[in-house]
Structure formats: structure tokens, C-alpha cells
Image (cartoon, rainbow, N blue to C red; front, side, top):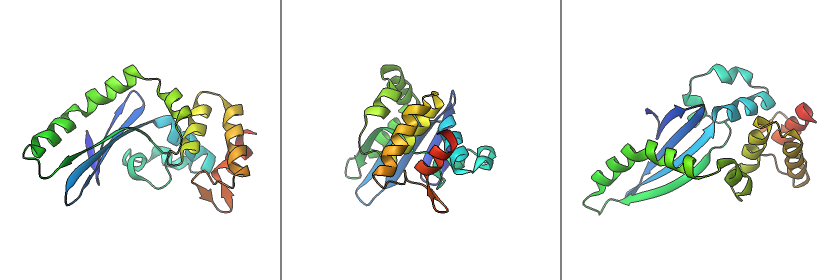
Amino acid sequence: MKHISSSFYKVYDNTLLICTYDITDRSVIFSLEMKKLEYDNILWNILGMKSNIEEPMSLRVNGAYTCPSFKLESCFFLHEDEKQREQVEAYITSIENRFNNFVAANDIEKIIMEKENMYHGDALKCCMLISNNNIDKACEIAWQGIANNDSGGFIIGDKTFFQLLLEMYN
């Protein structure tokens, strides 16, 4: 796994696995997330940022204009626990297995579509749907976003993600 800022990351079969961490005065907090590389490509195409596709992988991990990732799990380890270092090391070592087990046991796309209140979740859903050639459903979500005065999390000039998506695909 590679490391940048407060994240570890690795690519598996065109899927980016990201493990972010935060060290507080009381604990170490981990968040295990994933997204298909194609989702960023679709987002950048919609936003008119195609050149980002050729940028280093780290841009997809911590860049400002990237497709949101899907959180698989979160966990924390308290500093007071005498075995914290061992627990943290064991967790980091198990990241790849945790990811593989989760993907094998779950329909990720179904979970994404059913999940509520995800950070820029509708943008993720639209990119996933476009990836699966379900353009009509992506446009439906975009129309709903516009009706709700939602930007989808991205604004380029005076246009929102949803407006740009509809210009491209509608």
C-alpha cells in the first residue's frame, strides 16, 4: 500500500481502496473506503477536467475534485488500551483481507444505490450508473438534484455537477 497525507491506498482490479486515519488525543480512527477508478474518470469528463485522468493516483485519494468513495467500515482504537499498537498494526495488516471479504460478500452497487445521506452520494450514484450505461437513471437523479437546489457537491463556473451531467447526457 502507498501512503499520502493521512491515507493508505492501493488499486485492486480498477478499484481504489483507501484507508484514512485520524490520530486524536484519545484514539486512532480508521475509515476504510473504496471506489472504482472509472468513477473519477466519469466525474472529470462531466466537469471538463479530463486531464486529471493522467495525474498521479494520489489525486484520486485526496484531490478536491474527485468522485466520493464508498465507506466500507470505520473503527477506532483508544490510546488507553495497552494493546493499541498491536491492534493498529493488526488492523493495517488486515486491510486488504477486510476489503476482499466485504466485496465478496456484498453487492456494492446495490448498497450504494440504497444508502442515504452519503457525502455527495448522488454524484457517486450518477457516476456509478453512467459506468453501467444506465444514463436514464443518472439523468433522473440529476433532475431531482436540480429540483432540490442541490449542486451534487461540485460547481464549475456557474454550473452544478447535475447541470453539467444533463448537458452531456440528456
